Length: 414
Image 1 (cartoon, rainbow, N blue to C red):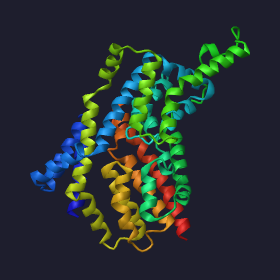
Image 2 (image 1 turned 60 degrees about the horizontal axis):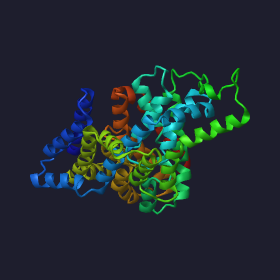
Image 3 (image 1 turned 180 degrees about the vertical axis):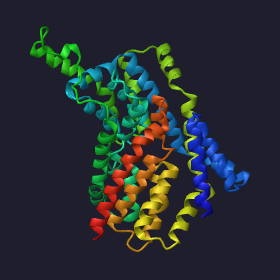
Image 4 (image 1 turned 60 degrees about the vertical axis):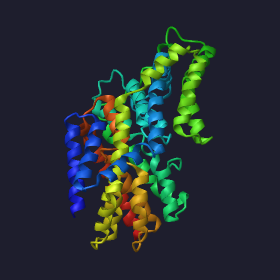
């Protein structure tokens, strides 16, 4: 019980600081400090946690490279009007405003990149330009629509780890998780499109009919140019999905390709590189990594899981609460799978397909609601949104998916 009280205290502390507009990286580092105090961690253990999180952790370096490269990539896309060309083409392809906005994070969401919301955010901003949408609504759309894939796409390591830990084949697990992925997309429409009419997009004037109607050949040329504007993003997708290149190297390769194609000189390259670095982003990465490591080193997640499992609580409650809390605390799918699925497998009835699928659904809902989920933090930071304003859409959407998960579990449990 004391672990539960400590963790709740830390979460409340984090939420209060975020509401007071304290920078996210600082919030997480202060939360880590509070954890070390509440768990009376020795100084040596604290230093070891920091070293493990920032120096010995290759993920920290990968995420720092990826987010820095994303900033540079965005700078070039804006400078060379590639984003404008993508929007003009998309307005012709997706006739409705809703489809246009949702398509961007859905497309980028196929990339299993931590912090990928930072990639799709400028596209959502461009797609929603002139609509007068509040920052919180744009932040929700960018955040929510990039996340259906993690339930079903084996490019994401969470579902792969779940299959490996439980011994369940990926095919059946993906199929069982499919209603949750569809639920994320459906609730994104339900709670994200309020106030966005179904009016058609206004395509680029050059693509319209009327008095200045182009010949068929010229229209095909415009279509080809529009497709070419997506080539930088398609190249990243190709490198990651087909060739298995890690995201940070794929986006750096795409950025280098843009430098070559547009014949950037060394001074122009340096300008982009310099503009790519952000101390706020680096501080955010440090905060996320340190907070996650201190949670593990302090024993908070393991102790809480052991406490709940030892109290004679019904299986369905354990299947939902344990992964949810681990996901909520860490904001990471691999963390809740690795921390709780071995424990669930040891429970009677906890290792069958419908139970594991239900546990995965609940754990990932915890990830989506986590105040330390880096995609949520980045969406909020990019759009300068109020966190509670995003949560007002995220929480009811998560409740709908939870009800779907409960319904599926009860049906298959018989």
